[in-house]
Length: 171
Image 1 (cartoon, helix red, strand yellow):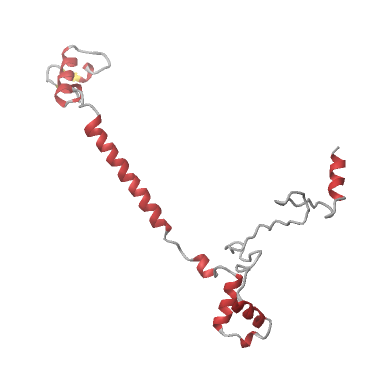
Image 2 (image 1 turned 45 degrees about the vertical axis):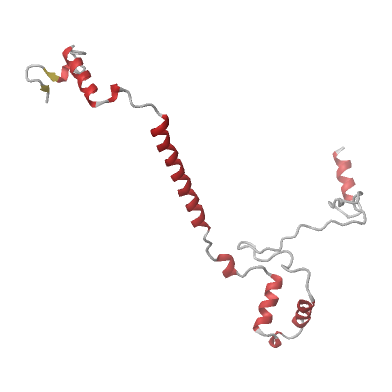
């Protein structure tokens, strides 16, 4: 089955490995031809686009293209720049120039950090209940004194580090 499918691709009208084109009219390989994917933008890593930037030319641009076929010494600098702009969208200097997009990104990041800080502050003030009394310093001091009075863990724990005669921590 696989060799049969491979041979059908080879024996097709377009030749080896070519597939039929599909169009909006219906049948593959028919009269309607779909336009190819066009890549008219040059990039730094591949500066030569597949197609020129301007494909539909007005009368002035067509006259300039005809003048291009002659001697380039007769062309002015402005005409050479116009011909370059017909072929390419940007120069290398324009492609490599720094953008100010980082300012927008950092502005958005700081805005959202500020907004998150406001939400957290609002939650602490209006949503969270007040701290329990057991977290106050007075309560912790009373709890520590109670544990020392009860002599909790006298061998290795808290009471073993307290000197009961001098009423201070052992050194």
